[in-house]
Length: 323
Image 1 (cartoon, helix red, strand yellow):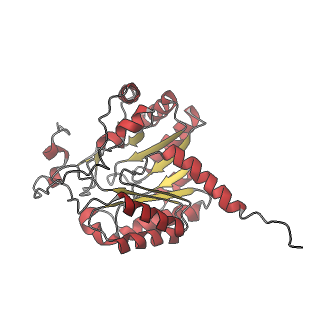
Image 2: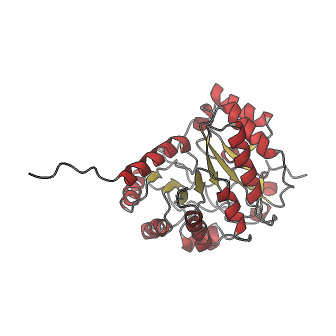
Image 3: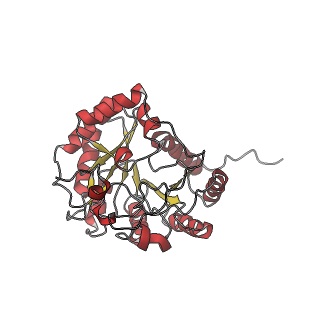
């Protein structure tokens, strides 16, 4: 039995990689250790329901802040991924069979936590014919039944080896936001995301809008992996060509010495510049900061996202005709 707390067993595909130094984090990235009562209550609810979260599995730096107010990103279909992305801390290997009762437990946890907005993500499941699409749909439907007032955001894998019906299954379940992260610039895919294809991921986002033009779409990238500013600008343009509504940009943080090296820490001023550029390109919503993650403040951001669309659709208010 694998012990996923041991790095060589958690990431067997990285065990023989050379170590990369882990530079000291600058002051603008350091966060406090999670100790609040709210954090403990959220952790207990998740444990009681036998659920995994990307907050823990991916080592998110914001877990203390988010869990203190009951916000957790549910990770369905197990805690073992079929991909071996060099940036990611989620365990890799052969996943276990799907748990058909998991959607109901996720919905129960959402209701217990009183979430107004929930993000549901997953490991990659290349072992399944539909990549887990129906499991996503079942989870969305279960949340709708148990917590009808909760808005739902999905952060899906790329369904690379699946028929087109897989994506259609998830969209047909009517999540409020469909998120799929591009993660990095295309030139870094062979090293950072070797099991994925940049233009396939971009096409996923474009197809969501073709299937349901009213659905909000969202995508994110990390910086500090070795990309340059021009590459980030090109990704923004590609996302806008796919009609993506919401972009997130955050600093890559290296989980272990075996993971992809940090090329540099991007300054807060550069993030401010990226945010301004993204807004100028027409995104309805932008979140760009060192600690930005796909699900960070997702509920508040969704409220602002809806308001931004309403404002854009209403257009400028005409004044009185000149005399």
